[in-house]
Length: 443
Image: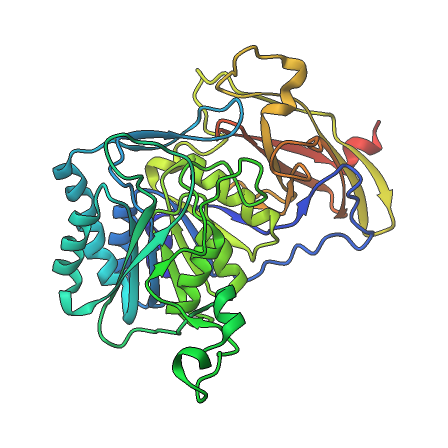
């Protein structure tokens, strides 16, 4: 995708290699650092800007499926659901006119980047479904409307003025009549399994091995309700993997490019990795980017690149202003011999202070404010190549974060190693360590 690269800066590549404790010592052969081809991309930018660039670029691979979960005009200011974090996720306060002014040009551009045989799924709820349906009819044509999927779920809530609102709507449109569709199935109910179909339809009918043909009323996938659920990344509008698995299996083939221009927690990317689809994600929220990096690296994703617009690029770590109160201090680097071709390198975080200090800040407990950290063992000052990512064993902060690591690296005279810390407030800090083997030989 040559066009976007020229206009949006590549600020980071992530080569997932998750490490979960301080005993992670790589073998003497060293971790393989050879670059892999990167097909997957996250754009941290205004999706309108990204869509304009993608629509104007030549020779782009066609996008076969778009899924978006845009703001719902819920009049809520969404924040991270993590403990002791009030990090902004996104603002969802709109008037109907401003909401439509936001969504309309984006949908028009999504149609432009969509392949002729592609389709789009737009996920909304009762706040805006009546508006969005009309927009989609105008842009894609009423003749290309395929389904209005009703996703039903349970959960708390009470109202004395109306029925509880416990469903979302997902509008499915094709760009043409040549869209991909693979019928999906659900398990038969207990009653159907017990009696079979013969009692109703006669002896010539039998239960299908794959289950009952799926209809447009989905009641078998619930929201992520438990705060301790393994899938819960504490992003306020996170959707369950099973929902995206069904949509992507239904409307695309392995190898098809899938895009999500309101990426949120990165569920679309994780599911695409599982199902063998390359992906494009876009979101301008730092919390969205942090959540996506974390969940993909934890799950041994394929490598992916991060692009940022000029404005976003000015905020990348290492370009903080003089007024910044964030502080990252690394321990003194130590090395040990490891044969003729490699060294053992010891790295550790000595102290970290986020830009946003939590209430009752205790410097001795600084590790509690760190979500994870990344290492680029061969920093070239143009982009951060994340080769190692250090996490708690469980993303719910029920265990300790490893603050030290021993790495096996190829021997060379001079080293430039960058460490990037991600904190609980979606902040980032980077520190670059310069040293040479002769520095240690003289000690």
